[in-house]
Image 1: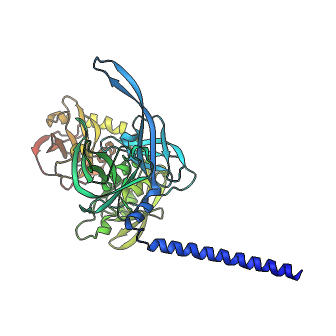
Image 2: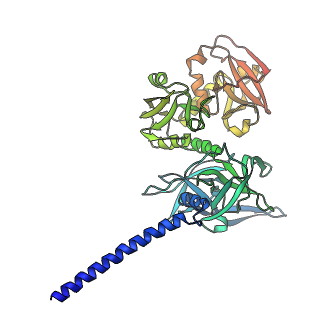
Length: 469
């Protein structure tokens, strides 16, 4: 009996020593691997980013025309890549990847599959927002900056080329600020050029830097050439995606932001949200939030760019209050604002008012429609029709003119104009300045709405409006 107990104790001790040795060996292997020359910065960058990259597949029907004019329909299978930008399953990709796709099939890096829904899109920049259902928090890509990229720095493309999931290619930034025509009706502006191989199926995937941060979204390749691919700069993509999220949301915060905080501000501060204007309905909040304040958090959640702000407010409804963490010249403050109704609920009203007071029918156009005129316009309102005898006609405006600002405010969307027309400063001004773009030329127009007691107008070429908010 004693011999059997001794033998069992010896077996337990030996098993324990083996387990301990195995644990030590695994730890040593991990340390050895981390210190191995094989574990290069490129390997580490890939490991950091790849879990937030998804593969996209789906079929669509296209119509072909023969030489005799006969039309035929053909089913084609498409493929692309996407990037997870929010733990709830929101993904950014190229619009052409999901355009007219009946069933958007998404595969995560761990092999999990789901069917995505197209949430919003911007054909001008070829970006789209899709969402997959998920019961767990998904890994989010780390976002870098594209404003300080260097030619020659190492970049990595991750994607789904020709259906080969989770493929990576490595190259450098070959050039910056490339404008690439796609066809007679579309052009990509201000792209990153890289020699990292980008093939069909890479569209919508990330171009990451050596730190594993996404600095571009792969979008196009030069047909017939080798080592010439292009990506949308991440700074541009962030703004577009923020707009897509904000348009999808059923409430509006009324905040407008500057790109930078002004002279003498560090780069890290410029990577924050600097308030340019607050257009809220709450007068006390309007007094509490000042131009130049930097927003550091929403509902206690730290944020570093506008997309993070819009995503944080995605489920907040109109009438609810949100808490903002502010930095005002180094002093930490907390203020609450009330969410307002979205622009879509105001569009009918502002369209009617613009027709009655100014004599114009308007539609919003993206920033690309007014690019290259010398100012950082966020978009504009294109005049589609002018009422005879209206202030707009007396000012010699014509269909096709784009209103980019009124007085000191930009007008990228109809809700911007709605806020201006209801603003007391505008109402008491009588004649106000309107800033226009006509065939890439800026004009300044003075008009008085028909509800005012007088009516006057004048037109002149101008570089005014440079400080439009």
